[in-house]
Image (cartoon, rainbow, N blue to C red; front, top):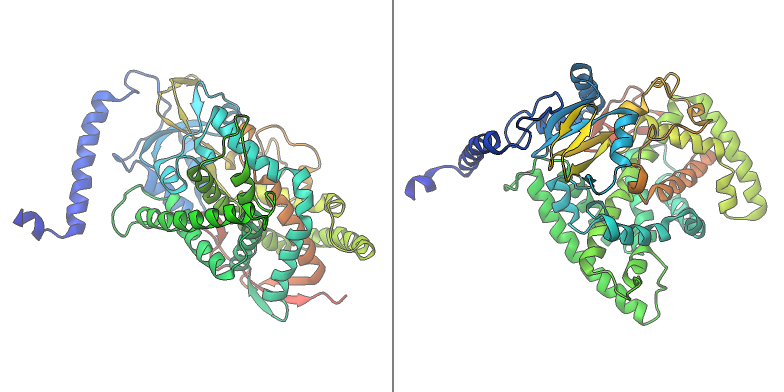
Length: 482
């Protein structure tokens, strides 16, 4: 006992991991579900850690597409690896996307890595399937489908106008990415949570950064690790959301808040066909997912729009022309309306092209519930499956000159499963329309008021873990002359 106490905690922790790794190797060799099967080619890497560190390093410098491309060049369109502590088969391209995103629950389920489940919670929509998934998805989609979002245009525009007045007006320079995070979190706080307190918003925004980093981390729950920090942040967020939910229940009961004021209120008052309400755990886990997905990914999209419009003056000019026409109609009719948004056809293509070239999320996970056959290989029961965006999004057979930013890529409808920035099939992100609406309203106000230039024209991209400019995209502003 005295000897153990004399060993530094860090050394003891590493030794424990090393011993566990050796045991893992021995057990894996004896009980591996892949023994005797025609597995996809590839490399499972180190025990427990697998190739996670290499993958995360590529993610950090926005080189995941290269990480995948190098392995495809070596092994082909399907290969094995080990990510987040689990053997994984990566399926690439349109065929891989179709296979994973269209498959049924009898062979493949939407099971996320340990880090995702521990941070988001076991009742989040990404972990559910069959009737449970349908119940939560329908609840969220009812609030976020285009017909429902029509009523949100005015509220969303109000937040955008307030943001520009507070953070852009009177300034010669701004740091775009942090401002986009502020804006999208403010929109999410208002429309999803009905949260007005700026201090409370800032606390949750800060916690969401810690949560996002933790879901893409090595799943080691040791003091000081990214994963450990994320778990602690989740505990704090759960307490805050629980208090907000109890307060909202009282406000609804007293008639102070309408049940459809925001998504939190909607989920609280939702009843199924048996008159059962969602549990607090179900509400909290899905609010955490939406808190992150509802603003982080959209902030990436808005930042890339600022960047691409600056890099392509001809496209900026076309967007400006369209938005000027929309603005002229607004001057007759007042505030921005759903009919105005529907007129933004070219801007819509620009938004899609930004999502094609820099999708906010690189890919997603599934898990096999029985042995699966794909392209002549056997993927054993219990393995992770990973779909990724880059191979399909940069397919030269679908997109002419795929490395060029060109909104005309979306003049015609794209083939199925070649444009998947928000997933696809039954697992299409329910917030997709919500994000697009924010982007269109933001671009409308941005190009109508400002011209801008990048202060670091060759600024590199990084991932933290979402793809953003490494210096935050500082830009120089100039008010439009009219």
